Image (cartoon, rainbow, N blue to C red; front, side, top):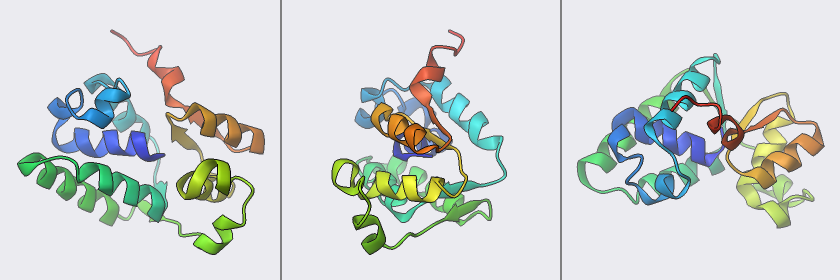
Length: 152
């Protein structure tokens, strides 16, 4: 999962009522239904593949929350990261910096392309990244395309 769906998952695990209030998830138009979809989607797999770059972005975004909501979301985040079903892949930054997509996409998206090329499905809300991954032959889904199918 890319940063936005993963952020939605961790926010929803603790404080689904905050999804439409938190600026980052609100700016993406996320609702509780989106959280439920992402939760069900993630539950359909035996493991979640991530990178330290994605986790850092999620952590920084969760850090913008306040009080008990922030603490609760970080607790959910910590529990989920510690689960055996969460696998962190750490391609070296020096190797990522040498990739053609590093300059136009940055380190997080380059790490996604590198790790997903090993045979993993990517869920993202980033249309540009999704298009790039598909062109590389990586299995990638733009979540925004599925939102149209969610029941009202």
